[in-house]
Amino acid sequence: MGKLLGKEKRANEIADFYNDQTNIVYSRIAKITKQKPTVYVECGWKGSDTYGNSYSNVGWGELINRSGGSNIAGNFSEQMPIINPEFLLDKDPDIIIISGANWPAAPSSLRLGYYTKEEDSRELLKGYLNRPGWNTLKAVQNENVYGVFHGCCFRIYNYAALQAFAKWFYPEDFKDIDPEAGIKEYHEKFMPIDYSGTWILELKES
Image (tube, rainbow, N blue to C red; front, side, top):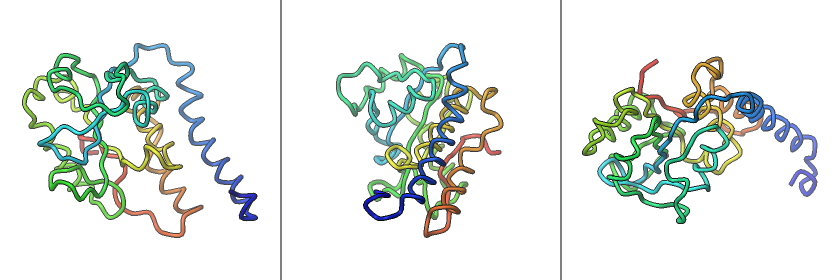
């Protein structure tokens, strides 16, 4: 695209920035020998009352793999399965991640991205904890439940999700990393609009 538009210098700057951001994760993950945490990820567009689709080895599933996690839906033949709640309770994952955006579908859907407020998004995320049986899950009991902007699954700033996943999976190894800072920097350097909203969300208030 840089060649087509006569913007090769800018395209190389963006590519270099992206590679620097992803290498923050890849350079450390390669050295980690700990047991991989088990992870459940769900697209939060349907809201807390209805299970949304998960991912096998595409989309969020691939990001889990690249971040050093073990995806509980990784062996599904369907690329975006809606799992049986009993399957989740049986697997009892270490980490739960719900993706959010400015969804129009359901009032209880997780909202993340531009113009969202952290406190409002956190209240919506807490709504998922009220699902039947979720109080028995260790991820819920340990407050290892997180939210991530759904667009990070397929846009150039997916490095932010990669960093967030790695930090959630291996807190001690990535404690110095601020995933949302990379999104802010990307906006400052390359975007025609200002950064706003909440893109990476933790159940625990900082």
